[in-house]
Image 1 (tube, rainbow, N blue to C red):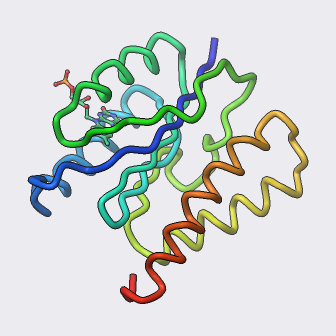
Image 2: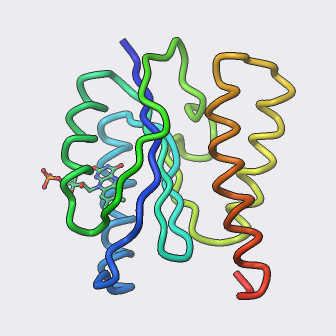
Length: 144
Ligand SMILES: Cc1cc2nc3c(=O)[nH]c(=O)nc-3n(C[C@H](O)[C@H](O)[C@H](O)COP(=O)(O)O)c2cc1C
């Protein structure tokens, strides 16, 4: 059975840029190996992540993520079984979003998904857009 989890969190203030880059790199590598699709956005001190894959893999990974000291205040937004993956065919199936160009690509993909009118993923689209648009508002003055 397939499962998806989506959460938002605050990155640790002690996390150096080098540590962040290592985390993003190993995350992508591990997820591709475990066939976990989704996105990880790091933006202005926040993480937003969607992971999707086999239920046992997703639950095991989420248990690790929740206790990871590199972030805190994990707020779960979605945790549910799914019939099909949303990010299987997006970019490399698991994508790191850490610049405005990648963010714009994700917005375009979300718009495309909206037109596909898959009701079951409306909530996923909404929470992702909320995160992106809140960040865009905040970042308009910081030249993200
Ligand atoms: C915000 C955040 C997101 C993470 N996402 C993933 C992920 O998608 N995949 C992954 O393998 N590890 C992810 N990690 C790292 C895991 O918490 C954990 O360190 C990693 O899976 C290695 O676990 P292991 O030491 O048991 O092999 C994330 C960590 C943080 C702080």
